[in-house]
Image (tube, rainbow, N blue to C red; front, side, top):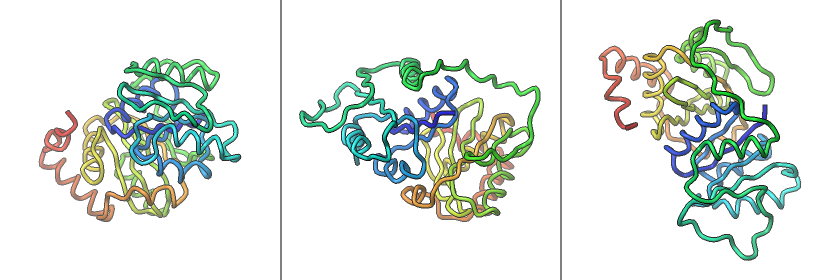
Length: 261
């Protein structure tokens, strides 16, 4: 399965692109809002393709492409640059060019199609949300634990990762969308879900998973340095789970998810 890193400072757009790529058959997608954060992950989590917007505040798409092209360890890594209306023109002395540049306010389907073209494979049809058979969670070599939420509930999954002292990204795919929870040696340090971040995102993701009761999860191990750059959660997992459980018991799921719209 090709590994894709997507960089977009717009969290809502980033979540939408990640979901569109998943529907196109690309499930190993790491979604980031920071170019500098992406750089910390490249060497140990080498992608097959980087998709970056030009307008990333810390390291823009042009500069990131130049850095990747000059790094001999990144030889063979594909780069797709997305130029939105209003972005600055490419520097005249740009070192290293992307494999492809898409300009304009393009639909996500066009971006997914180009990703498929660059990776030399046709996009797969959307994954059905129905799960007639639910395989038990099992380890998967380079990607770690993965399985169905019909077999193992999200609170149990997070506790298993915490007890194992794991470092990495838990990607949760629900019918309504995707969320991600980052762990640093078993501690939850960051979460993203539908434009929300931190503890609010973590609670909303738990509530959504509880309400929808279907979906899949995958835990991708990462280096410790890759998750330290984004730390938005400071309470321990037990407190986070108790807080989310209280909201579920009190029937306030709508209130927790309201900021998404």
